[in-house]
Amino acid sequence: MGKKDADKPRGRMSSYAFFVQVCREEHKKKHPGENVNFREFSKKCSEKWASMTAKEKKRFEEMAEKDKARYEREMAKYVPPPGESGGKGKKRKQKKDPNAPKRGMSAFFFFCAQERPALRAQFPDLGVGEIAKKLGDKWSKVTDKSAFEKMAANDKARYEKEKSAYSKKAKASPQKKAKEESEEEEEDDEEEEDEDDDDDDE
Image (cartoon, rainbow, N blue to C red; front, side, top):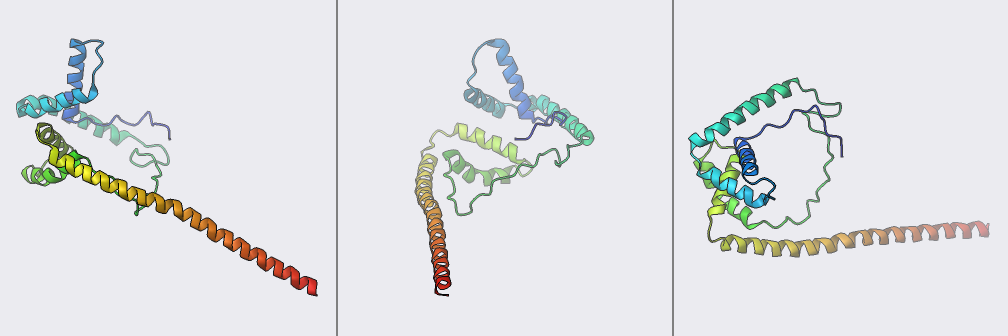
Protein backbone atom coordinates (compact mmCIF):
# COMPACT_ATOMS: atom_id res chain seq x y z
CA MET A 1 0.00 0.00 0.00
CA GLY A 2 1.22 3.48 -0.88
CA LYS A 3 1.70 6.19 1.73
CA LYS A 4 -1.25 8.49 2.32
CA ASP A 5 -0.63 12.04 1.07
CA ALA A 6 -0.78 14.24 4.19
CA ASP A 7 -1.15 17.41 2.06
CA LYS A 8 -4.20 16.17 0.18
CA PRO A 9 -7.35 18.14 1.14
CA ARG A 10 -9.88 16.36 3.32
CA GLY A 11 -12.84 15.08 1.29
CA ARG A 12 -16.04 17.11 1.38
CA MET A 13 -18.93 16.01 3.56
CA SER A 14 -22.59 15.70 2.59
CA SER A 15 -25.45 17.30 4.52
CA TYR A 16 -26.37 13.85 5.87
CA ALA A 17 -22.76 13.25 7.03
CA PHE A 18 -22.85 16.53 8.97
CA PHE A 19 -26.18 15.50 10.51
CA VAL A 20 -24.74 12.13 11.65
CA GLN A 21 -21.67 13.91 13.06
CA VAL A 22 -23.85 16.29 15.10
CA CYS A 23 -26.00 13.37 16.33
CA ARG A 24 -22.87 11.49 17.41
CA GLU A 25 -21.53 14.53 19.32
CA GLU A 26 -24.88 15.07 21.06
CA HIS A 27 -25.08 11.38 21.98
CA LYS A 28 -21.55 11.50 23.49
CA LYS A 29 -22.54 14.52 25.63
CA LYS A 30 -25.70 12.79 26.90
CA HIS A 31 -24.10 9.35 27.35
CA PRO A 32 -20.35 9.79 27.97
CA GLY A 33 -18.34 6.57 28.00
CA GLU A 34 -21.16 4.49 26.50
CA ASN A 35 -20.27 2.00 23.79
CA VAL A 36 -22.34 2.81 20.71
CA ASN A 37 -23.72 0.08 18.44
CA PHE A 38 -22.80 1.72 15.12
CA ARG A 39 -25.35 -0.25 13.09
CA GLU A 40 -28.25 0.66 15.39
CA PHE A 41 -27.06 4.25 15.70
CA SER A 42 -26.84 4.62 11.87
CA LYS A 43 -30.33 3.17 11.48
CA LYS A 44 -31.77 5.66 14.01
CA CYS A 45 -29.99 8.54 12.28
CA SER A 46 -31.36 7.43 8.90
CA GLU A 47 -34.91 7.22 10.26
CA LYS A 48 -34.63 10.62 11.95
CA TRP A 49 -33.21 12.23 8.77
CA ALA A 50 -36.08 10.80 6.70
CA SER A 51 -38.68 12.34 9.04
CA MET A 52 -37.06 15.80 9.07
CA THR A 53 -38.54 18.73 7.12
CA ALA A 54 -36.62 20.69 4.47
CA LYS A 55 -36.40 23.58 6.97
CA GLU A 56 -34.76 21.30 9.57
CA LYS A 57 -32.31 19.96 7.00
CA LYS A 58 -31.36 23.44 5.74
CA ARG A 59 -28.78 23.94 8.51
CA PHE A 60 -26.89 20.81 7.44
CA GLU A 61 -27.21 21.62 3.73
CA GLU A 62 -25.59 25.02 4.40
CA MET A 63 -22.76 23.27 6.26
CA ALA A 64 -22.29 20.93 3.28
CA GLU A 65 -22.23 23.86 0.82
CA LYS A 66 -19.54 25.63 2.89
CA ASP A 67 -17.50 22.43 3.07
CA LYS A 68 -17.86 21.92 -0.70
CA ALA A 69 -16.52 25.45 -1.31
CA ARG A 70 -13.65 24.76 1.12
CA TYR A 71 -12.79 21.48 -0.64
CA GLU A 72 -12.88 23.01 -4.15
CA ARG A 73 -10.74 25.94 -2.98
CA GLU A 74 -8.15 23.60 -1.42
CA MET A 75 -8.16 21.22 -4.40
CA ALA A 76 -7.47 24.14 -6.76
CA LYS A 77 -4.21 24.81 -4.87
CA TYR A 78 -3.34 21.13 -4.33
CA VAL A 79 -0.49 19.62 -6.34
CA PRO A 80 -0.57 15.80 -6.32
CA PRO A 81 2.74 13.93 -5.86
CA PRO A 82 4.53 12.55 -8.95
CA GLY A 83 2.86 9.45 -10.35
CA GLU A 84 -0.59 10.47 -9.18
CA SER A 85 -3.37 12.27 -11.01
CA GLY A 86 -6.28 14.03 -9.34
CA GLY A 87 -4.99 12.99 -5.94
CA LYS A 88 -5.68 9.29 -6.53
CA GLY A 89 -2.74 6.91 -6.33
CA LYS A 90 -2.07 4.37 -9.04
CA LYS A 91 -3.57 1.24 -7.61
CA ARG A 92 -3.20 -1.73 -9.87
CA LYS A 93 -6.55 -3.46 -9.90
CA GLN A 94 -6.50 -7.20 -10.03
CA LYS A 95 -7.95 -8.51 -13.28
CA LYS A 96 -11.36 -10.05 -12.77
CA ASP A 97 -12.08 -13.29 -14.54
CA PRO A 98 -15.06 -12.63 -16.85
CA ASN A 99 -16.05 -16.29 -16.50
CA ALA A 100 -16.24 -16.10 -12.67
CA PRO A 101 -19.79 -16.47 -11.30
CA LYS A 102 -21.62 -13.32 -10.24
CA ARG A 103 -22.01 -13.04 -6.45
CA GLY A 104 -25.44 -13.54 -4.91
CA MET A 105 -27.49 -10.41 -4.27
CA SER A 106 -28.88 -9.57 -0.82
CA ALA A 107 -32.58 -9.00 -0.10
CA PHE A 108 -31.88 -5.25 0.10
CA PHE A 109 -30.24 -5.29 -3.36
CA PHE A 110 -33.29 -6.98 -4.88
CA PHE A 111 -35.48 -4.36 -3.20
CA CYS A 112 -33.30 -1.56 -4.62
CA ALA A 113 -33.43 -3.05 -8.14
CA GLN A 114 -37.23 -3.00 -7.93
CA GLU A 115 -37.67 0.43 -6.33
CA ARG A 116 -34.82 2.47 -7.88
CA PRO A 117 -36.47 3.16 -11.31
CA ALA A 118 -39.61 4.61 -9.64
CA LEU A 119 -37.51 6.81 -7.31
CA ARG A 120 -35.38 8.05 -10.21
CA ALA A 121 -38.54 8.99 -12.12
CA GLN A 122 -39.98 10.71 -9.02
CA PHE A 123 -36.74 12.57 -8.13
CA PRO A 124 -34.80 13.06 -11.43
CA ASP A 125 -32.52 15.73 -9.92
CA LEU A 126 -31.23 13.58 -7.04
CA GLY A 127 -27.74 12.07 -7.19
CA VAL A 128 -26.80 8.43 -6.61
CA GLY A 129 -26.06 9.02 -2.90
CA GLU A 130 -29.40 10.72 -2.20
CA ILE A 131 -31.32 7.99 -4.06
CA ALA A 132 -29.44 5.38 -1.99
CA LYS A 133 -30.49 7.16 1.23
CA LYS A 134 -34.13 7.18 0.14
CA LEU A 135 -33.92 3.47 -0.69
CA GLY A 136 -32.44 2.83 2.77
CA ASP A 137 -35.29 4.78 4.39
CA LYS A 138 -37.93 2.86 2.41
CA TRP A 139 -36.29 -0.49 3.23
CA SER A 140 -36.33 0.26 6.97
CA LYS A 141 -40.11 0.78 6.74
CA VAL A 142 -40.84 -2.47 4.88
CA THR A 143 -42.62 -4.82 7.30
CA ASP A 144 -42.77 -7.95 5.12
CA LYS A 145 -39.39 -8.63 3.50
CA SER A 146 -40.02 -12.33 2.86
CA ALA A 147 -40.37 -11.96 -0.95
CA PHE A 148 -36.96 -10.27 -1.22
CA GLU A 149 -35.38 -12.70 1.26
CA LYS A 150 -36.63 -15.59 -0.88
CA MET A 151 -35.07 -14.00 -3.99
CA ALA A 152 -31.80 -13.60 -2.10
CA ALA A 153 -31.86 -17.24 -0.92
CA ASN A 154 -32.44 -18.48 -4.49
CA ASP A 155 -29.66 -16.27 -5.81
CA LYS A 156 -27.29 -17.48 -3.08
CA ALA A 157 -28.01 -21.10 -4.05
CA ARG A 158 -27.37 -20.21 -7.71
CA TYR A 159 -24.05 -18.58 -6.80
CA GLU A 160 -22.89 -21.53 -4.63
CA LYS A 161 -23.69 -23.96 -7.47
CA GLU A 162 -21.87 -21.87 -10.09
CA LYS A 163 -18.95 -21.22 -7.74
CA SER A 164 -18.51 -24.96 -7.12
CA ALA A 165 -18.47 -25.70 -10.85
CA TYR A 166 -16.09 -22.79 -11.49
CA SER A 167 -13.67 -23.93 -8.74
CA LYS A 168 -13.57 -27.48 -10.14
CA LYS A 169 -12.84 -26.13 -13.61
CA ALA A 170 -10.11 -23.81 -12.25
CA LYS A 171 -8.44 -26.72 -10.37
CA ALA A 172 -8.57 -28.93 -13.47
CA SER A 173 -6.92 -26.35 -15.74
CA PRO A 174 -3.46 -26.25 -14.01
CA GLN A 175 -3.38 -30.06 -13.91
CA LYS A 176 -4.12 -30.22 -17.63
CA LYS A 177 -1.40 -27.68 -18.32
CA ALA A 178 1.11 -29.60 -16.19
CA LYS A 179 0.24 -32.81 -18.03
CA GLU A 180 0.79 -31.15 -21.41
CA GLU A 181 4.16 -29.75 -20.25
CA SER A 182 5.17 -33.21 -18.95
CA GLU A 183 4.28 -34.81 -22.29
CA GLU A 184 6.32 -32.15 -24.13
CA GLU A 185 9.36 -32.89 -21.91
CA GLU A 186 9.03 -36.63 -22.58
CA GLU A 187 8.95 -35.95 -26.33
CA ASP A 188 12.11 -33.82 -26.03
CA ASP A 189 13.88 -36.62 -24.10
CA GLU A 190 12.92 -39.16 -26.77
CA GLU A 191 14.28 -36.86 -29.50
CA GLU A 192 17.56 -36.47 -27.59
CA GLU A 193 17.85 -40.26 -27.20
CA ASP A 194 17.27 -40.73 -30.94
CA GLU A 195 20.01 -38.20 -31.68
CA ASP A 196 22.40 -40.07 -29.32
CA ASP A 197 21.61 -43.35 -31.10
CA ASP A 198 22.38 -41.75 -34.47
CA ASP A 199 25.73 -40.51 -33.12
CA ASP A 200 26.58 -44.03 -31.90
CA ASP A 201 25.81 -45.51 -35.33
CA GLU A 202 28.29 -43.11 -36.92
